[in-house]
Image (cartoon, rainbow, N blue to C red):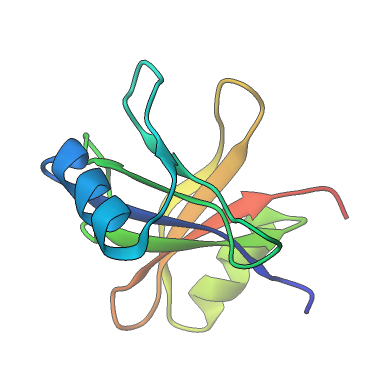
Length: 119
C-alpha cells in the first residue's frame, strides 16, 4: 500500500471525558501527560495504528474523527484531491517539532489528514 493510514484522531468538547470513555470501552492506553493534554494512544502488540484523543481547539475543519494518510508530497496529494472533487482545508503546514500536515475534505465533506513522510 503506497499511502497507508498512519494515525487516527477523535476530538470533542471535553477531551478528558472522551479519553476516559475510550479507555473504559476498549482498554486503550492513553497518555495525556503533555501541556495540551492531548491523549496519545499506543498501538500495542504490533496491531492497530497509533492515534490521539483530545479536546477541540480552533480547528479549521468541522469533523471530530479524522484519519491521517502518509504521503511523500502533501502538495501533490492536495492537488489530486482537488481534481477528484475534494477541497483543501489546510495547506501543507510544518508544525513545531517537524511534523508536516495538510487536510482536505472529500466530496462528501469528510476531513482527511495528510502526513508528509520521506519515501
